Length: 275
Image 1 (cartoon, helix red, strand yellow):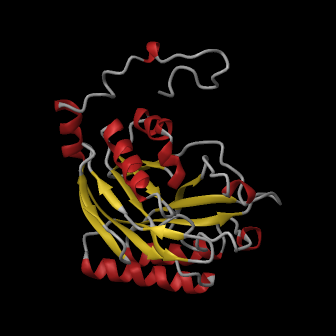
Image 2 (cartoon, rainbow, N blue to C red; image 1 turned 90 degrees about the horizontal axis):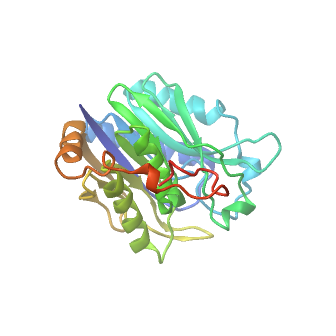
């Protein structure tokens, strides 16, 4: 089965939430007009608020079905597409979650994921999630990651062992670490013989200068499409038939694993399935 995916590389210029909504709605309209077959559109990490540590994320945090949900629910239904967008989610008076939402064409959030691997800077602003998340669709199963999660092979491997057909990783990756961003992303696709889509910001805000470098990789870790430092979007057809063919013909790592060799001591919280 095929899925037609678009991923937006947005400007990092800071705007108020309503302006971000307007920008994202314009991207959705533009992509749908240019690529009528598109089924899934993905935005970067914290696309609704922007990724800028001069913001007060506690004040910006929303409940899961807040006003941003209502806005994007209407867009998903209007265009008949899946959407992935990032926002700050309330956490019962504690530091909020850095969250991505997976919304179906009926305008329902069918899955959300709280970023589990926070950077040292992020720990002052957010609460880490405590569970990985996947979501079922009519065209396959999707594993959700956010940015720094790409640096941890166990995250993508856990998703692969759960049988995902696609990995999605919205990001906010800053300079001078473009090379690491690209290599981590490629490796997670190749390690797990699973296509991966990652999209980033470009430009500067008060806190960061972002690398751009958004990419889509196929199940062999081969780059399908990429962006450099322009504000634009990626578009690709991801065919599960090609993924399955790759997994059968050469990229057979998931079938040939030997979990009994990977066990660690009692102090390892997840001793036998995390490698």
